[in-house]
Image 1 (cartoon, rainbow, N blue to C red):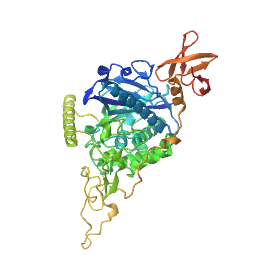
Image 2: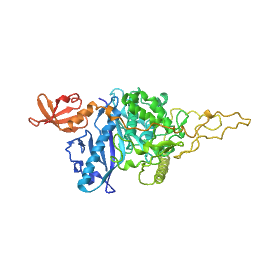
Image 3: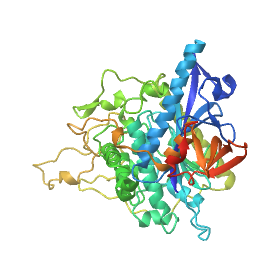
Image 4: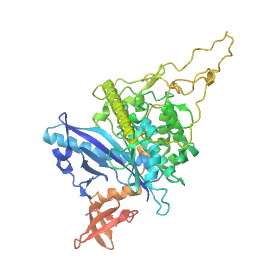
Length: 508
């Protein structure tokens, strides 16, 4: 069955120093005491159904497969936090035994969605779909699941799935909103009859004008970084109308994300639950603050598993509106290091990127060809005589929402219609937004694939044809390896063969 899964990578700090887990521990069994099933490669199956392994200086946890169905986005995020809580619990016990202190810093998150490729239709492959998504997903994902110290959002084609990469989000609710948007958009665009970029214009998808994603830093794929854009979407005001689109408009980051979510709303509702849909559009409507509306990255990023858990909301996201701004609670905390220094460092990266582009263009004899399917319309001119997509200040606090002076009532010129006057900001912060609440877990059941993986790691035996089989490992995510208890013979079952066999599992 088509499925969804998530991965999260964490940097490990021991006694205040960053360590490579593969060098410091060599294997997860060094601090995880419960028995784990072996998987292919260097990963191990956790007792919570997911997997863990060390990868290039970080520790990574992976959820099991969860089939695509209503509520699957909340299920996969809950499963991810179950793996995180188990990892944090084992590290706490290791701290008690060793006398050291270890903490996990959020690094990245990967959202994986199945891709069902047709062997006949070669023009609709996973590579073409990933490139199409690289023009569509990064900006909304930046608003939903990134923070003010993020650098980019990527899309990678992975044979039979699409993988969207971004920063890890330590708030479960925002992670669910991000997953709901990604799954809904990927599955809807996967069903399109063509993956040509011109389809985006034909279907009314808001796409930034003159922007090209770059090559992904790891594996094959595309990555839209902050320096690929005229300004950073992570540090500018999310309500400033500073983003030119291919249809000639200038809209805000929030409006762009809201338009895309509304365009794919039916697919989003198909795979999300009502609570997740309300949370998603609450962020897009400004009723719940995004992490990009905060002064800096929350401190929970630097101590994942302790600062926030499943069923909780980050204190920084419980801000209340006051005088048109978000008033932060006293318990709000921020990441270490100066935010101004971070912004200055990213500006240096932007200038270095531009210099690289100039050198490449000089060697090639011209600049790179941009996506230019048709000329963009001329920008609309407002009644006041100002250009509607005139760039606006991009500071955190923003400026006055009027661009021009107040209307002149006594002059000879006709009065200007304020409703047509261009504004710096796209909206005002509402007076009383609903208070953020954690996900109602009691209404969330287990998926069929989740039950299979939980049975595999439970220590129980499978009865098949009157014989008892003990699970010993996994081969990929689709096949489980068993040992027949009578003679030790190895037997492999696919996870689809194990669905609906709850009564065949026995305790030894």
